[in-house]
Image (cartoon, rainbow, N blue to C red):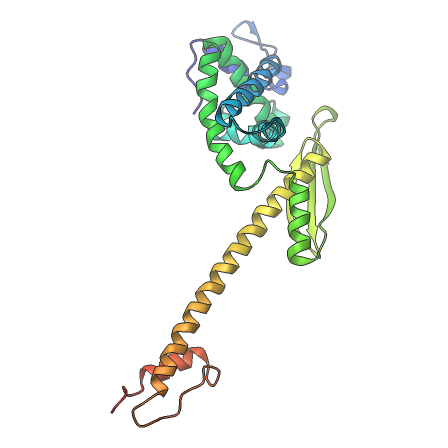
Length: 280
């Protein structure tokens, strides 16, 4: 949830997008200010907090690895998830056009607003308060990043996985470009063979490709895990069925053993369960 502010006007400003300020010059006799200056401040603060926290958390990790982890923790898509987790979309103040265009779900708008909230919290209560508020969000996100290898280049990971498992090189296609010149949103599809594996959006084509690759990796890994679990369950059932068939076919009178492949698996289980026990 959003932090409590001593000065609620700071929070109000932090969630005020420029499109809203352009449509509302004054409120209660005061000029309406957008969140861009607070965003500037918050961007520097969250970068420093993420760097300091990682430095303390991983004392034996080299500078290169720390840099990639920090980049994963503060990229636009991650910031938008922080924003969603604390309820920023419901509090955003957007202009009419931005609101009707789905602005409260745009990655860059959410990320900017999160930075602005952190900057506002710093002004309101100081660095320690901003640090205590942000670190729990970092801890949750870091676990996901490490589990999903999101600190590595997603396009490289997807290409390695796709070529190793499918012998196919992924292809990227620009699907659309939306938004004004100063706030473009690129949407990219990643194709594996003749199918769209995933779609990603970002404020640059490269960022959208990375997002699409990341989503494709997650989807493919889940399918692979699901397929492995199904195969394991099938193998277990088949093994039990074969044991029943062998048991049913070996009687005291020297009956012929049933071969597992002689009858269908389901029918074999049913037939074997109706066979007389050995010795009768």
